[in-house]
Length: 247
Image (cartoon, rainbow, N blue to C red; front, side):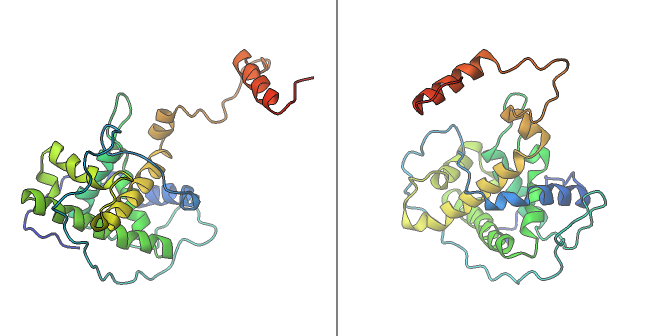
């Protein structure tokens, strides 16, 4: 993918080893079976007027098919090997990191998506030689190119050098279901996929699970205290709706 500009920014620096990213990718591969995740680009309010007179055409990319070995049915996560090369360029990673951080910005103690290396795992995902990943690759790479073209069409500059309000204005066009302009169908689908990947990978990180408040299996020290009063009250309410009660 090439941008319609000679301006090249390269600020995002990978921080995972290929082994680490493959472990992460393999551990979360089952997320592909989930439906798209819902999120928002800015403050959670619907974009005011998703239709606009300025909509860049959707790129018609002709990407070569990625061939090669996958990681097999029983990958060794302790001594992970990476059987496929990464395919995103530094400018693509830069733009991807910007978009990931718009989807999940830093807030309070929680880091942004790019701060915990989500773009690198998305790169690993998009570079994998599997049908779903190649479908996402075509969609995401076209979407990255469209994002720069849209920025050029509206503000005569690539997305990375726009002001934050200008960037959010472009993303708000495609971040919400009410973006129903027929010219935005493909950009909306692109952003939905990118949001799904970004959120899906972020919540599998230690920072993501902490931000969700997920504790997992936590050992109890000492005697089991039994369910809390709040839990029993909730259970009583559920049983009552079913015409049942605790013995």
